Image (cartoon, rainbow, N blue to C red):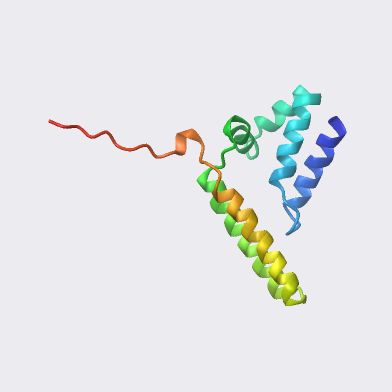
Length: 127
């Protein structure tokens, strides 16, 4: 598990810079692997200022913050737009890429927000 954790962490970091390599699933996998093999590395990940809050939200209840959803959407749409503009492939390949992007965005936006972000109905006071 320790080596899988490191491999997924490295792939997640590479995914920050490579357009179609996802970052988040690899970081979540590394957090899971480190939770089973290295408490020190797991603690480092969950307390990391950038990755920690996202990992903790996901581990607690499978939630993704609205800010993370918005950033992910901008990055995914931008990456796919650049890919469509630069890569010379057939329409069917572009259709598959678009389907993949829509699928990922659907998954992201159908996850709940963390509990603190969920908007609760206002109390109605009757006099």
